[in-house]
Length: 256
Length: 347
Ligand SMILES: Nc1ncnc2c1ncn2[C@@H]1O[C@H](COP(=O)(O)OP(=O)(O)O)[C@@H](O)[C@H]1O
Ligand SMILES: [Mg+2]
Image 1 (cartoon, rainbow over the protein chains, first blue to last red):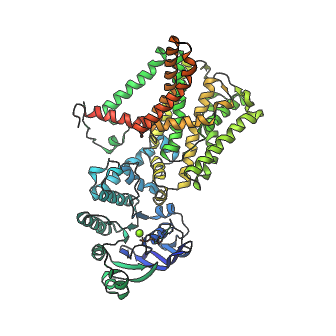
Image 2: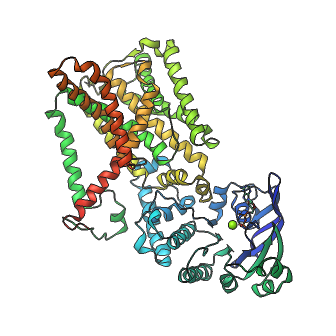
Image 3: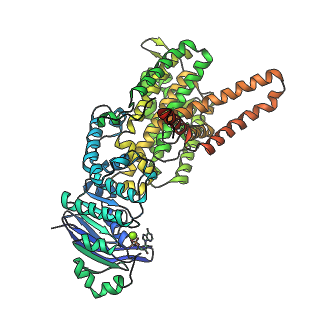
């Protein structure tokens, strides 16, 4: 069953048409890749799914209900998590606090309980710390950096912390915008392994935008190809690779 | 000498006072604060009360501006609302001080939420201007709503009593100010260990992604405004009960700017920084003034041209600070501490 689908999505800024009638369905537990040249509209699709952009037309359906009009924070609480093409960590916080922030929607401490701390707020924080340490920090192998401010970290590590923060959101669907862009071969391999583990061990559905064709072909179950704001092909990695339109539009003009 | 202790449990690691050494120093600090009033004279106690009141207000502004990133030029007006609320409740309704303290905070918080409501649509400079407008409007009301505020003559209040005990001098009032400061500082520190404090910082650092992380921007911005003006109101209540008169002249725009200077010099977003900044901004002008007095004892006419110099030197000090330590006194303190933690094994 499709856990997430977009139907007939159209988006424009002023006169600029960014997406026209894009639609696809993501099966529960799949890794679903979106590929296409720069400026094709891939990030805009994720922004529509996350609620940061409001499409002029079309629907976003998550777990059977229409969330097109929901605010981004409500969507996050429902189980949509996101990592960004340009890292969007909170530079004023440590790695640990950045990750903890991801769990925001699942915590209950309000203003008054927070000021008091002692009691329910402290218990909640302790449980969160344990969850973050055992389920996320161990898994992503970032024990050594957890107390550091994020601004001091290398690029590849920052990307990993962003993934950690997204996992703390306890997502059902994880939206990843170019997770290996700008990484060296070793970092790329690590990240690909983490993504596969997240799918296989945690059953989290992943929608991934990526330029690195080797990664896409290795890990994705289905691939959708976007060009000039339109979907031009969709299928298994092999089908897409053989698709004449795709070869013309994208694979032909060798990238990276 | 001690080298980074290994924290056995997450609980111990999450604690504010993480090591034995820190706890010992905290006890020393509390003892010093307890002994201080018996040792100090009226003038020092007067300064201590004013500093404490400034700390309460500065912690408030630092939550809004330093942590949540919403710049306010109207903080003094909220201190004023607290002061007037308290003065009116005491003189017109005869309410006891201990009831007025939270009510003054709540009244300021209510206005804070109203002023903060446009923050959903406005950012940066625009919000800054909106809070400036609030500052001007409240100042105007303090002056012109005579039936309520007593106009430019203001309102006189009696010394507060708690359980029949009168807090009518600097020494006695110290025992109101210090507990309030301790409660406020502790509560603010606590908040930054929970999701509420993290949400504030996330909003400051990147508000669009904060929302995608599940944070309701509007709610948390209003929380920041409410909390910040609540503390301003509490500070105002303390202030009027200490000084025993409130007039419109007490809360001008440059007082709002002084609070901003406190948190910038002390360290934006840091509770400790609010404390350092409030102390700095209250004590340093006094130190400069007494230095001036010493000089003018030698040459009496030096006073005339040295006294404007006092303001200039103070301004220069702030600029020098910002240039050499842009993260404020709190950051400087952290470095000093780190130095001693590893001493004598410096790197
Ligand atoms: N907020 C925006 N305002 C105006 N134009 C935008 C905005 N976001 C994206 N675009 C435009 O939409 C097009 C697609 O952008 P994007 O979705 O980032 O592409 P991709 O991620 O595929 O590289 C680009 O031409 C870009 O300039
Ligand atoms: Mg993009």
